[in-house]
Amino acid sequence: MPWCPVVSTPLRATVDPYLVASYLTEDAVVAYHAALQFMGKAYSVWRRFHYLTRKRARAFSFRGLEFVPVQAPKTVRSLKEWGGGISEVAHAEGRVRVTTLERTMVEVLDQPDKCGNWEEIWRSLEMVEFFDLDAVITYVLALGSSLTAARVGFFLEQHGEALMVEERHLDTLQAHAPRQPRYLDSTRKSGKLVSRWNLVVPDYVLHRRWEKAG
Image 1 (cartoon, helix red, strand yellow):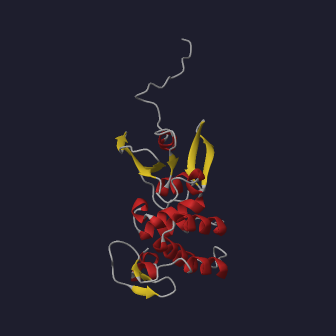
Image 2 (tube, rainbow, N blue to C red):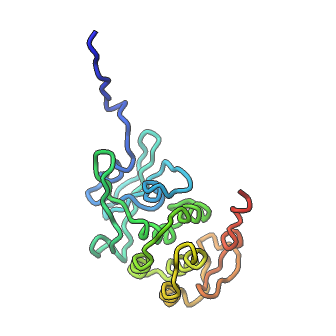
């Protein structure tokens, strides 16, 4: 009997979620936790994939995977490549548009709900060995959020030695931090005021309590 190859049918074909997300709209860009996961820097594996777009689109599920559109931030929407930090990568016989590690760091700190919780964010970003910190700061300033500047500054200060953070990086971010104290996130959990950033940081984030629990 002659050998016959097994041909995938549409119902049996493997779905690559990053390729799917990249083609859902003409300008789609894989972002947030999905970008970290694509680059092998996510602490946990998710089946939810956020993508940036200018379009108004609806989230949908397919084969147990969830695809969630997020409109590009208003402050950068009209800029070239939405403020930069977008790359195109060959992947699975196609092309994936994805935010760089630098832009991804800023965006998960800007919208932490799209990366789960602070432990997931911290542990994921700690998997990255190197950031172009000038690119990080450039995108923070493009976003124009004082709270995001404070969050990024606080994270970099905590990881100063590992990420080779210079005082000039912190000084630039501090100059754009809030003038009045702000909570780390919308849950408004009590914590310690980190005066340099005017940021009220819960104890479990300030001292990374999950490391001791683990």
